[in-house]
Length: 163
Image (cartoon, rainbow, N blue to C red; front, side):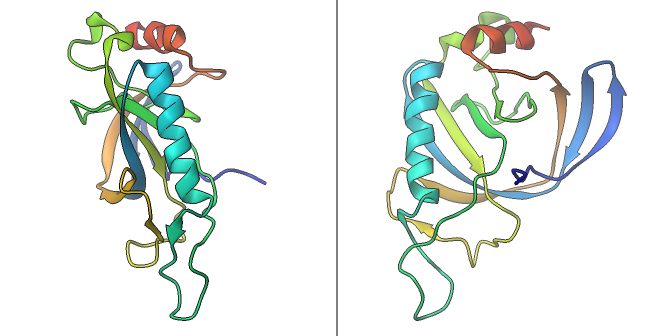
């Protein structure tokens, strides 16, 4: 079973770099404090709790009080101070806070974000029961993407950001 990823169009490609235009998406996100690794873990758990059923279903008047939501990719982790992202392929995209040269690992407040499956609209998406998790629409956006595979730990993300 394939994991759904946000729809995009490749506008340009040079080696392992792509310029992508992403379509609008709905995301569930949480803001967490700590270094990139600990914030990624705690934010992931908060949003996973939401998609695994800690929510209020919006489908039907007599339906289930909660609803499981399918996992999608990528999971986004970025410093909370800025909203311009350096996107990567699944599973994680990360963007440095402040000057890119200063380094990925110096952030202390992060936004962890899951893209919601396209079957949902804002009207049908279950509402989070935990106030630390919010849902919102993200407009279509263009990203420069450095394509690579494997685990995206802090050091590897910094290396790829420097690239």
